[in-house]
Length: 283
Image 1 (tube, rainbow, N blue to C red):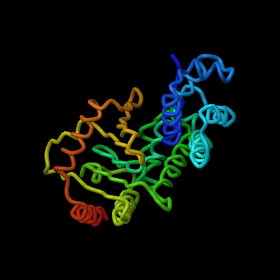
Image 2: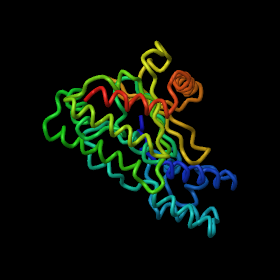
Image 3: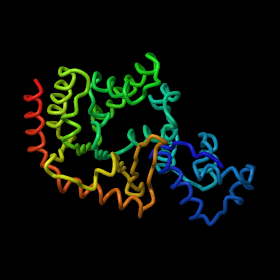
């Protein structure tokens, strides 16, 4: 079975546009391959994201399809950005694939529903180090240091000039569960308070008195993208690997869990007040 490349949102958009251009010209992949002297399966692999599209091949396709400026320049820019090397490639030996990092990097909105531990994008370095040490018991000291470095580098997505909208819905238990020392725990709570004041970050807390709610099925993330044609993707991490959900029916269950979880969460203002209260109590 072929493995699809971890395309960025720009890469997926480019492939959609190339398929549209071919369909408008009523050409089959075999027609295109014959006129360009390509193997008959080459365009199939490119359009399915199974083969990397180099710029020379893109140039040939656009010439065949008769695409002129300014659309040509726009598609070339997509082609240059589609498979751009991300910072995460320096850590690829630590993780299975890069799809998560690609989606997190390209998303316009990231919604995390965290019932057990605080989301990685909100963790302080000390909190992250302790969590990774416990959750990855076989990691060497070097691997631990690199995993912490990768987690902190991930947080750069929230420091961009135009960052994605970030929503974190936390369970109160994740705020009260001791992690390392009291100093580390309190520093993490105070960091949450400061992050929650930013206009691009929304933090809500489900209080313990809310009882059982749908989000307790497990921690998950929903990525939404700038282009309406790029459907949202739900992500859930587990002991036996990562799950990415794009099917509309399956995605609807995650959206329902998200909605039900927010229904029982405190407002952002009340949530920050609760975190401030917990911070004072932890000192």
